[in-house]
Image 1 (cartoon, each protein chain N blue to C red):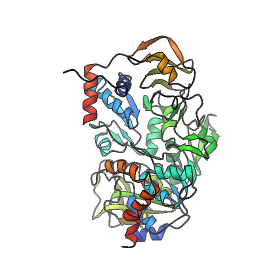
Image 2 (cartoon, helix red, strand yellow):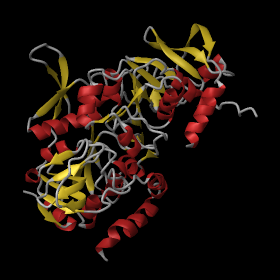
Image 3 (cartoon, one colour):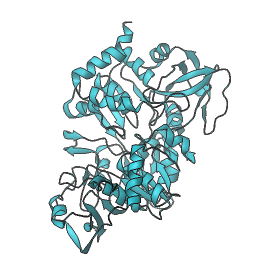
Image 4 (tube, helix red, strand yellow):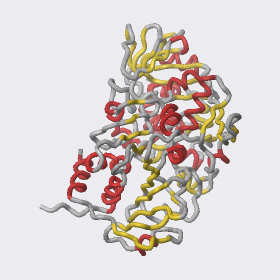
Length: 233
Length: 270
């Protein structure tokens, strides 16, 4: 029996998980980043140290947590620290290598907006706000942004700059991968079956493309079965 | 020295209309029972302070108890929006609300300065973001190295309320699991209330346990299950299903108000 082909969302998670091969530690939030990091521990990097904002360092959850405060994170962590300690001793000095971040808006320099859509004082949509992102993005050496690819997300101009993009190394979407080249996000990888035109259409700025855009490797049977087993737990 | 009293008495003695009140608990030990008691006692015009407003502040904002919110992340973790928080900011329902927002690191350092009774804390952060123009931070130069840093003002709430697993009969408190910013928030406050799952004869040391001595706490009140639908590690479980249900309950103003009347405010009449 052959498995159903990967959805674009599954592919995004699998590509994000691959980016953690060989890394020492990763800071993660909930949702797809958490799924990707757990998958990385299963398939690519069993020693990867997962760090959650709630203060749990070295958490080894069996289930994908709904919230960063889930009890399983605290119970399986190597150490559990207070919020001031998390930011002042661990995030700020750069002790966590990679960070996975999401955002409502991303600009061509990988700056992120998670604060408001519209005017700050009279927002059309009030978003949750900064959380830990601004200091995580300047503390961790490598920032990987995980976002759905569309013109509402990949915008010409952010409505609000919540988080700086200086340290972003990868932007992984459901269509492909963007990487900064001379400070500007550039399409370097397409997921199988996606065209350059599709990605350009889904990006509100004039997206630059690398000279040799590659196609990301199709999910292996092991990656796909591990991911599906993980989310079914 | 902490007095062991009922929850109603602890709130009546400490929380007044117009006060700045912090109810802390970072994804764990969120003091729902105490927050609900504040609402039942009809307190209003509050300046509510909390890093992650969560469902509790969505409820308190939704009934109109807050004139101002100080926070760093206003989402329903893992689920999506806090609809009452959004409705208050986007549509001024049920009243206009002033906001002051920071990053988590900023809020955490504000509590640290508050606990230390220093006027501000120093950190790297905020620079290059639009937060600078919309919140209370200032650039500051390191007098030793010349590095440009950011100063955040101390946070000293009139009242801090937190929840913990256990207290002894002298009012010494111990919490364990994710410790959040509760110790700092208690030490920063003018007055403090700690609700606990249970009162025990003797506190047993727990791995990672944070002890707050009774002589820095004003009131301790027993409130079993007092952090549900959040949780108290080792005693209650996080009710993830309720966090998802809240997305539906809170989406509609009338449905929200009916739910609050039935599940939170009705206990006053009973």
